[in-house]
Image (cartoon, rainbow, N blue to C red; front, side, top):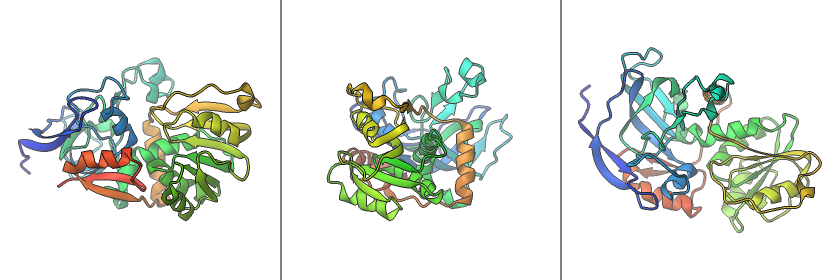
Amino acid sequence: MKMPDLMQAMVLTEPGKPLVPKAVALPVPTAVQVLVKVIACGVCRTDLHIVDGELKHPKLPLIPGHEIVGMVMKTGTEVTNLKEGELVGIPWLGYTCGKCRFCLKGQENLCEQAAFTGYTLDGGYAEYTVAHHQYCFPLPVQYANSSGAPLLCAGLIGYRAYNMIDDQSEKIGIYGFGAAAHILIQVAVQQGKKIYAFTRKGDLVSQEFAIKLGAVWAGDSLQTPPEKLDAAILFAPVGSLVPKALLDTDKGGIIVCGGIHMSDIPSFPYRLLWEERVIRSVANLTRKDAESFLKLISQVPIQTETQLFHLHQANEALDSLRAGRIRGAAVLTMD
């Protein structure tokens, strides 16, 4: 199939400014890359942090987007694991060196030379993109569409955060009930966990959504849950929720901060941390995370709730996410 010379893309030219619609040159894959026709791309809170300038030093100009569902259209000369016509997902982690101290310890998510889709590499707010073949993942056919896009970051980061909690933890609090939470709760409930959902004050829509998906309790983040939690995951980028989660959590509990950016954590009395409570963060993901999660959801189906926007509506989608108007996840579809 003859490829076009130009493609439509939404481009970040300056942090803090709206994305600009542009016709740009079709990217050409290197020997280790594939050219992918984008079917859909999720709009992640990380994209918002990049666009708003909270994550520093993005590639500029930049095509954002790292929850990409697409079809391989062309393969580089050294690509053997993917073929033309294959449906793939492209996540946040776009490249690791394989040689640094972290890669050699199996912690490629902390690679010193890592590159990230939609941040230091152009992403999926476009009709086409290129990606390193070793960081693309064949998708189960049921997710090779707009419903699969949120799985590629919200799902993966939620899954990594969830795996940092002790297997014995039964009562789990989720603070911030957005894209990641609405996926993770389905996994957790199917594994017999009791989920307590915390939302913005007055957000009854998200609270009702959480109950519908299986939460045993839902309230705003200032409320006290009816019983002490075994663990908590924070998806809301609000530093003041860390001491609140410590207060809500029982002895030995683990607090996992699942976002890439968070406002400053205020000081808090040591007694909240005492009794062997733990605070830890999640950074990026590994290819092993992606392989394990995609295998899991092929066996235990996940239903994503999406609000669809056309590519040229990317700024509208980001505004809706910023204002908390998205139930589930926002996804861009190609015109």
